[in-house]
Length: 364
Image (tube, rainbow, N blue to C red):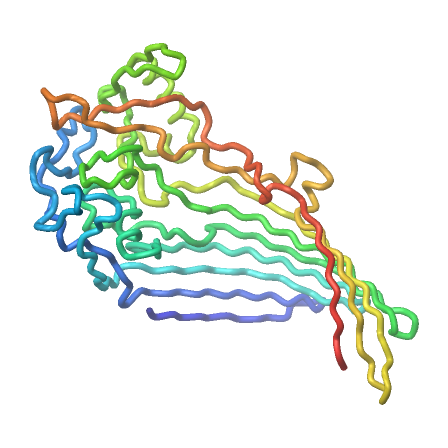
């Protein structure tokens, strides 16, 4: 890869220091995974009424040139021959602006904003090459992944920090109080079908087509857990409402979703630190320091249970695809099994306050 970095610091009136930094990275020989035993899909969906026209494998045709697993099927562990090729597609850039100042009384403050974008052919490292290959969302041909958003990096990030050190008792004691705030948006995710729409025998790697009208998706009735039949019309009413409330899907009606095209909501966290220094005079006149610290992570959640919570995606595989008809083997059927909102509060430790204590001894 090629990476360029340009930054400038400038002192403003009042001792305020401004920083502007830009970083650009271009892939020269990035890795892309291909299965050399996969044939090229030649069949396509009908795309009726302007709908899905992606390439798919034929129902009875060969998917592999020669290799199959010991059971005669191509499965997750029967990965075939995965070749690692090179691609020059892919880039990342970020721009950061920062202001900071240190005051004479020991108080300091800083704030910064970063905007970043990153695109690549694949950013899934995978446990093995076959794993990385099969977990990469695509529209049609699994061997031709498109340039899309990377798995990593926030699009927007704001950080701020402030604190002050109080020294007393002839500098033998010092107390430091500090705060760190972070807000960001841009944890990316993909919308894929549950099932195997393009018939490459890999479940969950097909990016969805977002229908604009009911005529663009072949919904079929299903029986729910309560034994009730849910008709196609009922499913469309629920699906249409879901798509309208989703900030990403509502903007892509009548089009394909993009790998990692969706962004999670903004999240924020405030941390606090209290640190006490004790200067210890040892033989030889050396001044060592015993340092005790107490940190509260996600202080806002400690003060209010509704603060500092993270949002997670309830279901990014909301539509199930299958080929149930023997008389029309090339016509996919879809079911939408409910759901009214995209995001839910993450109940994990990411949304909880935590505290930690520390002890450190610093030798002169």
